[in-house]
Length: 177
Image (cartoon, rainbow, N blue to C red):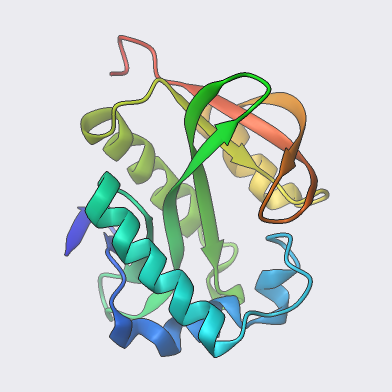
């Protein structure tokens, strides 16, 4: 199912048939070192991630969607949201995530997809706060978040990576909503 489009991209839900693309993305050593995992995901882990994403889309109306090139239909990455609950603040948020294949880096796709996701959240998701965690030293991701208007909040412990990471925050103001 198509979620949203930009001039060059289509963001759509993942399907089980997308497993080879998921393996190319989350099984890639270069990608993994920028998203806080110690090693590439196995076929079973990628399949489980896709299944959880499909379920999350059904239950909540969002997931980390497949990002495809309009011209070719090729999946070049993933961008979308995860649920995030920060116990300390007792505030529910959604977490913006973007992962792209190295061949797609440097073309503005992540910024374009992330902007489309923020617009989608504005229209379809009931939240005032979107956060984004960044693997330490990932300057490209930090630049994207800066362009989008995220503010640095400090270091936060992320359960999935089991470490403290810089956290950025984006507030949807009533004007933006």
